[in-house]
Length: 227
Image (cartoon, rainbow, N blue to C red; front, side):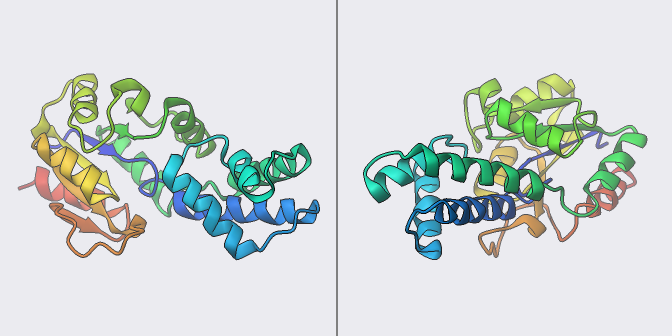
């Protein structure tokens, strides 16, 4: 009997890739308007490389970009970039279609909800509040809670403990097979691949189910519980 669903956060509940792209592009355009001589496409690639190397939650990406570009941090350009980034981030931080509807349906049917995310606690909770989903979850496990990133079983184990449920009573929904599927499967948790959030062109997710829309989680739970 399925009694809870654990969700990944980024690219499962919200389109993190789109948000990040729009925010970075806005920051580059703003720095250029402030007088910095930039090629937009080249600058975008350079900034994304910094994120890939230093982490997607890095708070000093534009400082490093400016040092690489002009040799020092000019606060005029830095401020232009940060303000534009934050405004675009807020404007583009949106849940995928049917997220709120699906979560509400599950809650009304007595299904507990949890999040297991590799994001730091503050950033994860800020995104959850932006989406107005802060009342939906029984527990939120972040990197700061477990101190280990997926596919480590530790964050999944912590989620199970907080939910007070066994591995057979939960499902895991995520977009990254090497982290979400592998980590949950190592605990014996059945998995659902959020194909709609896939940014890598995954061919074989290794999940028990692949879905094109988050609302399909409802049918999967009904299928399992009525079997």
